[in-house]
Amino acid sequence: MAIYTNIYNILFKRNAVFVGTVLAGAFAFEIGFDSSIDRFWDKWNAGKQWKDIKHQYVTKDDE
Image (cartoon, rainbow, N blue to C red; front, side, top):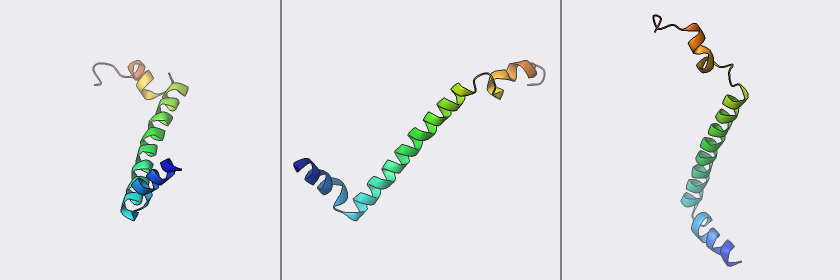
């Protein structure tokens, strides 16, 4: 029970700290989720995206 008491006293006892903890957690989750989905999308669609096939359509003169 001591660990729950410590967590409560550190993170949830004061409203400002609780709101900050929720916002920081949401921000960290959003960054982690976004980067994970981007990696999944790039792996799933490898060879089909513009960055993968650009060299077939753009010549040195066009750049």
